[in-house]
Every structure is written in structure tokens, then in C-alpha cells.
Length: 64
Image (tube, rainbow, N blue to C red; front, side):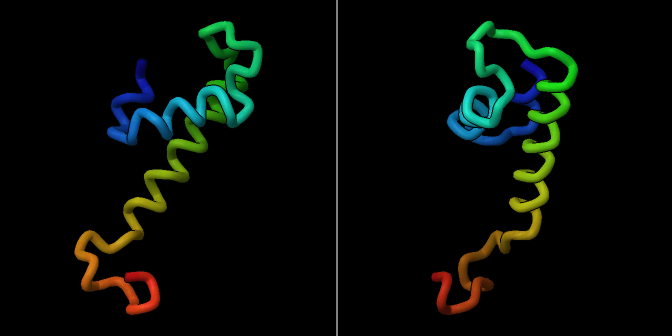
């Protein structure tokens, strides 16, 4: 699956596939619109991950 190339956690990818209105009918395949919706969600997760500090010491104290 192309989504696995994102390197996101498999559980998160599974949630996007089934719970984010992509494959609600559990067919195992997506139409063009559902695929685009899923890719958008993956991009959102990757953007969030890129914004997070890699070193926990860089987090504000209230988030540690």
C-alpha cells in the first residue's frame, strides 16, 4: 500500500483508512475521492510530526 511509504504508525494508517470515512463499506479498496481524503489526512499527520520537536527537552515544560 502506498500509504505505508509515509512511515506513519500502522495503527494510525488503519484508523485513517477505516475511521476517517475512506473505506466505510470495508471493501478493501478506495475510490478516487476516498483516496484523496486519506492522502490529505496523511499529509496533515506528517505536517504535525514535522512541527514537533524531536528532543523532548525542547518542549515547553507544561508538555513534558
